[in-house]
Amino acid sequence: MSSKVGINKLMEAEQEAQKIIANARADKKAKMVRAQVEAEAEIKKYQNIKMEEYNAMKEQKSGLDDSEQKLLADSEKEIKALQTGYEQNKDVCVKLLASAVSSGLL
Image 1 (cartoon, rainbow, N blue to C red):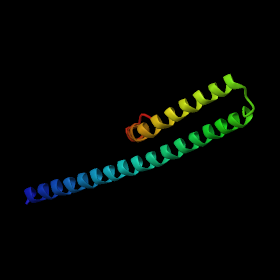
Image 2: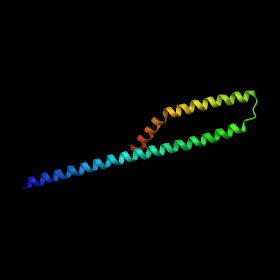
Image 3: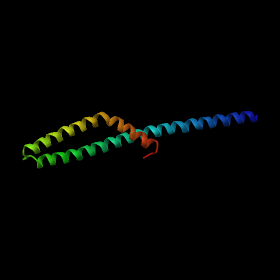
Image 4: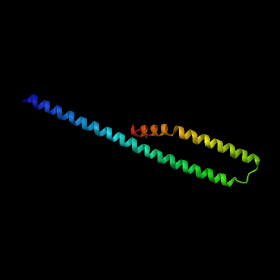
């Protein structure tokens, strides 16, 4: 009779462990999704701020001489290159941020 009690306790413990593991996995997934959403929001916010700064600078320097116009054109090329790099690397960045948040590093 005591072996049945022992087996029942083991089965209950195993079921409880499975519930704990399932809950932990669900929490981890939810944290990763939340981190990704928050990271995307931060990226958009930063991008909007920088675009506003760029547009303000562009408007301010609309009456420039030739050397200044060349510098502005070079700056625009550099900004486009940075934006291209951003588009290429944003998914990796979001994954890294999500990983850092879900692992408790941030």
